Image 1 (cartoon, helix red, strand yellow):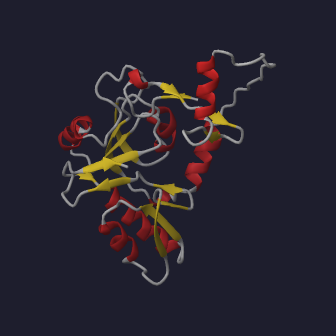
Image 2: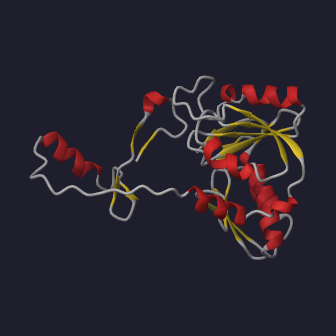
Image 3: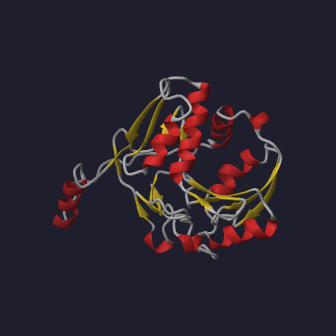
Amino acid sequence: MCTASHNPKAYTGAKLLRRGALALSSDAGIGELREIVTAGDPGDPVEGGGYEQQDVAADFQAKVTGLIDMTAVREMKVVLDGGNGMAGPMAGPILDQLPLHQVQTYWTPDGNFPDHEPNPLLPENRTYIVKKVLSEGAELGVAWDGDADRCFFIDDTGRFVDGDFLTALLAESILAKEPGALILYDVRATRARRRGSARPAPSRGSIRPGAAARSRGTTTSATSTAPTPGRSRPF
């Protein structure tokens, strides 16, 4: 898999996976591979494998829309910053089904990233969307990283919404619908996440520190934040 995620194009690299789609790491496989490469003798060639192309867009969209009550989304004006990454092709067709007035910016993939790196955790990369939300009078701004597996929110005042508080809001909603659901969150999060997540139903849900905030397919950006509004850093 060749990817740079939210990094500048100069850092494009390869993710190496072994059987079972398990990533190679310094503890599993990378050292052995390094020894083979540096020895200059990879051994006898083996018969090459094959590949197939599949269009998974329809399945992906059906899966996502199946997790959303589409009728619960009201009309609103939203500024979207795709960062010239994959958000446009991936999230675009789903958002088009919602009653949103979209202000699409940097919506077409472009590996040159003409405006900013697609990493909204860095304040300099969200300057544009903050200004655009305010100038458009939008109720919400959404910015994605390069491969669109994380999104970040700007409220109607131009303020960056820390991941801690977003996770707490999502946890409230999940626990209200599914009493006893397990909510996982980053152990480095502030206490606001645990308090906020537990507040609506402290006896019905279980809140545990974990690798990210996940429940029934719902994932938020896992960030570690300081109490000061608008400051966050990646884990």
